[in-house]
Image (cartoon, rainbow, N blue to C red; front, side, top):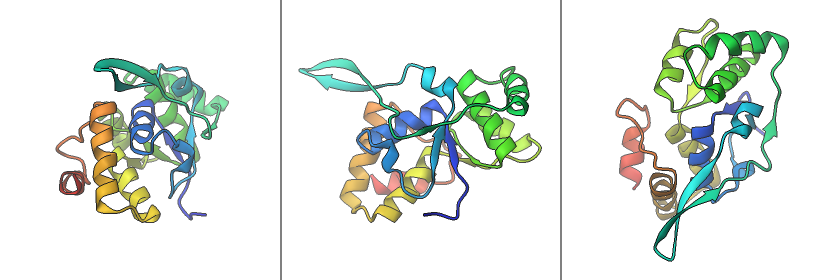
Length: 172
């Protein structure tokens, strides 16, 4: 088990992790991962090629714990939803109130978290994947395969200001 607080994931990070972990989100090492109902309700699909055609492959959130918002969190959610999409706003409300980590790549959510009181600790896809691969003991080739899968299936590239951008680029 880990000494880290749980992490609540937004939809983007769920998609990215599903691509990297071959759909096994419950196999994430390093944190206890949660999602909020707003993230579950979002259409979560990865891109796959079947017989040369691009198809939408549904992502299963099976194995992730779903946590509902408390009354206090719902109040914060409504406030955050003025600036953010529902999944990010609800995830941020839970992370802030419970002092959990927030897994998001959304620029507006990261900016909002950095100004929240109390401050909300944000981890991006590259940081979460980097930690997982280290704990799982993945080989460099397995890491590169996972990062390519995230880029191709989830259409994600880390932003230039991501703290683990150099690791991402160097690991492909």
